[in-house]
Length: 115
Image (cartoon, rainbow, N blue to C red; front, side, top):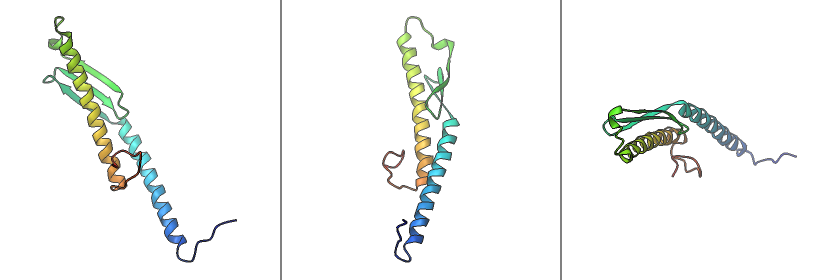
């Protein structure tokens, strides 16, 4: 048995559901697109360069041979961490911005960029 809404209420509800479904599809498409993008960051004046994808997985890491000092491996470790973290921050920021455009600032719990 179908519930019947008073005359005039059904159209608005259907329209709202259609818009929500369209937004969900747009978000899924944008998320897939963002996961394919690559984000590059460097540290130490370009001594270390990290590339991550939209899933925050490291795709490549380049280390300038001049950054390799056997007497100071801690500096190299710090440069690697800084480059990777910056690339991940960039991926998160772009994702938040792009997904926020789709939801137009709606406050949807659990969705990035909606706080």
